[in-house]
Image 1 (cartoon, one colour):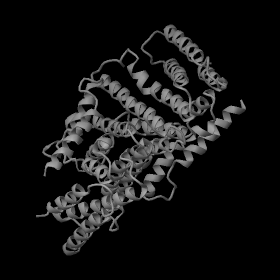
Image 2 (cartoon, helix red, strand yellow):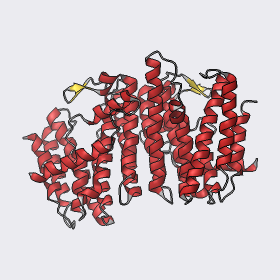
Image 3 (cartoon, chains in turn orange, cyan):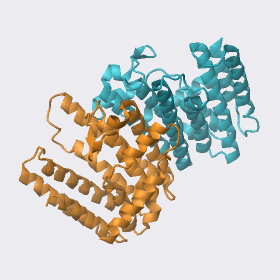
Image 4 (cartoon, helix red, strand yellow):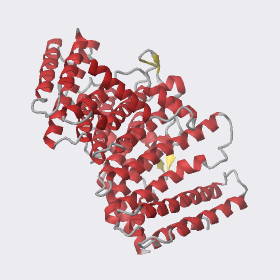
Length: 262
Length: 262
């Protein structure tokens, strides 16, 4: 799909423009920040952001700052998630995690820097910057609540909370922010922003249920999880009805993500 | 001074309004966030922010969101600074540090949450929210660079960097952001924003030189440090000339901070 590579390329360029140069002092921090972001992720969130701008009747180019912002925020959460104080993972996508490569202190600071750089990028949104930042801040606060809730359950020796609190906050919040930020940056109407939020919430839930199926670690029976993937994917696509722009990319994205199962 | 307690009261109320309620899920995270902020700090940065709004000819009330934002950001830096991966301090202002009280994971997440809440507050600035957020983001990125630079020197077994890089970024960046955010929230002219930035940069440098004198751990001879305190305090006050509003509070603040030495 031609559009796929174009949005990914736009996202890569926007992210690169929001990073410190390799020789920015202190160089170890700049290296860790760049390493964290140049990790070969799928850039799903910035794709959602750019495609939401188009689906809302605007231009992807207006959402570049927002797209960079959501990817930087996502990167920070991964860097801190991997720290020994959290999951203590030593590898991510086939490479050493940031703390394993640069040490714990630099990884802590690199995550902190990435959150700051995310907001700096969001503030540079050419349109509705305050609303774009507000959407990012809600998501940033929500993600931490999801992580802390999961950690609290683990510490108590309890299974992961069976309600959707963790899923919603750990995964769906960033999807919702990505869509809302793209729509806001494109000057979407409140009703269309809401449509795109509903799309992204359902996409985020579907994404998490699929992960449960792939990893085999969900708390629900497999058939129930499969049913929920279908249901949330359909709800995501249904939410796109009535948008003034071309929503084909978002529809395809939902089906591509579901295709991970096959 | 009557104005002093009024600005501190305004700052306390603004900060309290930006925090999660004690029963917000997950409660351990909410408790840690509140504990970090309710630590009896002097609220210098929000005082600068509110007073800058007035000095620029505006109203302190317009800068309440900005004042809360800068204090939350400052709080997050302290929480992460105290972590074992950084300074490993067990006490701050006579109480256990956040990680000592709530554990390392919750402290990490509480710091992350405070940075997000800071940007959420800044985005709620009733005027010029995008510019207020941008000023906060620059400072947030700068603070981390100062911390990382100091850490790099320590790791290399070198004395603290002798240039002003660390001081500027670790301390002055937040002072400068506080003043700029207050001015921007009050609708100040670019020239007046610059005057207030210059005030705050010099105040921040003076503050750090004074700390060196109090702690006795500066890299300069004592007389040279004293000379720099005088010089930067004078430069801070001189920068206030020409502002349309009442700058007495900021002038007093500079002299009060210098008074810590006596």
